[in-house]
Image (tube, rainbow, N blue to C red):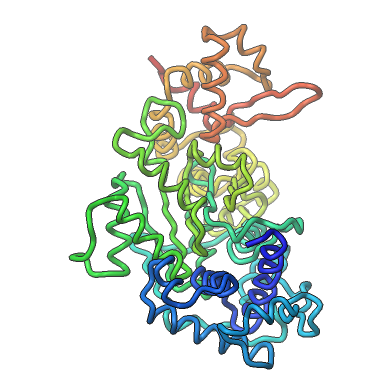
Length: 475
């Protein structure tokens, strides 16, 4: 296909995709796009089936439905025999009078209630109901009782996964194939993903959640996923074949897969994002999800940034990462649920515990038990005070650190102000190379926060973590 023909085809597919989405609330799937592209090349159904590894009957049925949909949309017959001519005539060009105003696209700046209601970019349209073929398998997903804030984050994820433009208006290479939700434990990553499901589930045929907290091998994970689509007796134990079959499903259907606790796949005592022995296949699998064409999406949830994600971000690939920050003043709802007193002091409490929902829930329980719910009385003591339960959770994270990382956080816990890398070299017995690697790893674990100052970058340790490090005896 020539460059001019390719541009012509891409513009036509964009036109068709936008109008199908406006009409049905669904995007073109990979098979439909393949049929359009192959038809433009003059291929027939048997050739398309052979190239894309589908049965001829399946491709023919998919083609018949597609041509009927296009005929209804264009107001004239569209078929495999005349599609190429219609493209050349500009029947599917943006100059057509049937254009839907692009301003009707879902606006990522809406509040949560508006985002929840948004199902289709065209207005007025009835709310898109869950398709009859929708299959939701949340497996061992936790039940979410309360959802606080995160309006902007929800809108951003929805924009990445469902639409094909960023919030700034920049064209993305395609709807996001991997969305990584990252931050320190307790910040609400899983809660955010569960809230997202309720908003975008109508755009998928399958929604699947799985936790990797018990460190399943890739073969185990793939087998678990493939069992959703076929009988277990038909599933091979060859990873390459399993991946190939999964990609067939990712192309045939629109699938949302959420893999939680990705950090459980990484080695303890090593730098961040290094896979345990026997788990390296995950790295190649995640890379394939990003690079191989399909219209599904994989959401990764982790308290450590996988190395391959950091590397793939450098290229113009359909991969995005969302790092959650403080819950901010939305965390007041948490304190209200605990019926704490002295509301004028709540902001100080929230800032002290970095707006982390888990940390605030643990601390609020402590305030109720020992201070009768009086936040002002609690804040009279040196902050932050760490409850035993919070210490235990912090310990789980610090046990994963390498010796070099431990040396860095012990030194940073002593510092009263942010420190530059050059200053750290004079205070710690590490080579420049080891120090840089350790600090980079701590940033990827979200324990260390870089801050830009005039002509230099300085680093601070998470204050809650710093308080725990001061009380913990490191060998």
